[in-house]
Length: 192
Image (tube, rainbow, N blue to C red; front, side, top):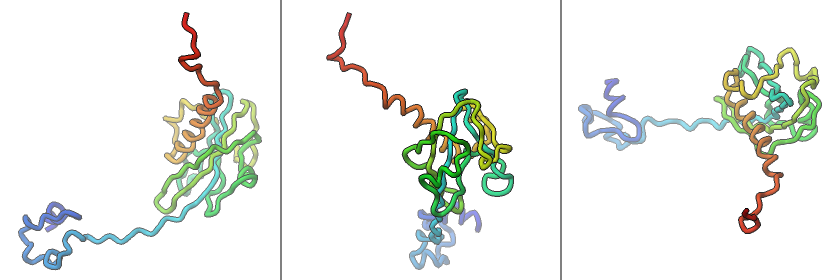
């Protein structure tokens, strides 16, 4: 009976014409075979918001912090962040969670990620800092480390933090190009 359910009685396209027990099937008799199994709609996930800070040192390393062993993403690395709450932080209150003093600038757009029980929206702040920069106590320096960009692939970074880093570093590399002067048009070029 289990094999019939797995092969013939499949959701959306049941093969009732091939089924040897179709004559005794109540869902077929009532015209419900294509509607079963009925799945209840999932409850909408709540949204949490936060701020992630990406600090890039002049030696090509980025500040990462190990998350607590217990809880969501336990023991994995993260960019230092504010707490993820229903209302989130913005403006100067967001900068209260910055891991170090720097010229932080907000990267346009949000990083979005969906976990099993909630949806997350992160604003990303980016700063380029010197190699001798000092961490704030609120950054929990004992859990922090500087990781070179080329070593991200082998680091214990969850996908949400990979998205944050890609978002910040993409903005960093796109920014100089946007400020560069355009190449002269073909008509304006001189040939030798």
